[in-house]
Image (tube, rainbow, N blue to C red; front, side):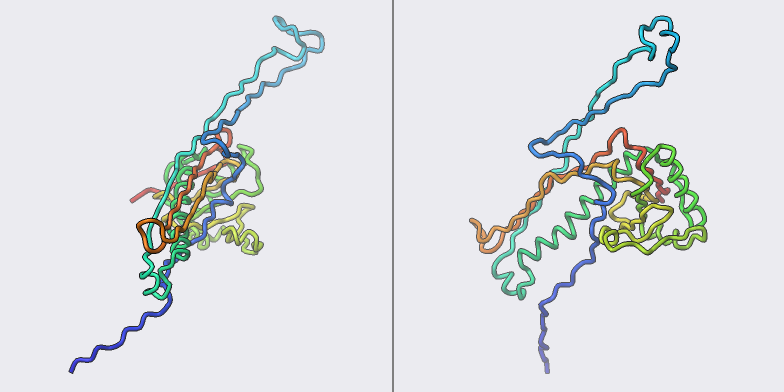
Length: 280
């Protein structure tokens, strides 16, 4: 005797785990792209100091302050390159017959959370790593050398006069584990709620520590120490739409578009230190 057992579908979705973006603490939005796809930023030079000629100008000069020179005012150009989009349709019967789990609003939120945010994160971190002002030879990090390498990064930034406050160390979960195992590292985990909301998990020697999934970071990522002044990460357009019963579709048509990019300022490259690890 054969018996067909009843299958019951519950009104729940087995969602994929996702991580909130943490790039806002590492980048800035200091420039405005409204009305333009390209902007230019001036870089103005300085001049050297001289010994004042109290008894008169030096030979060949008419000024006691020294030789008069002009200042350079060159520009660096930033053109937005990433103009990305997606679209999908959800039939009315599909929505009805999945107990409303295949609904346009929740599907759009899932698309942003699981696809859009990870793509933007990976791109921004990649730009920062490629344009880091200091990038030592790839080195295998261990619980023994991790603190020494982080101190090297701090020293480089100190000598480059990068602001000491608001520096951030980005690590993968694996490297964070090495930090926890290092006997020389004592991390302050008493972090304010405002920083925790941005993804900060601890503080090391005045640097905020942020843990980012390895799949959003370049291959062979070790750690990156950065200050937000270095990287401009604009999102010029972020447009998501749900069209109900558009021509040709009985149901919802979902469309999304995001125009974004990331740029490291020429005079701020020393505010990014990237330590890679050998790729096996």
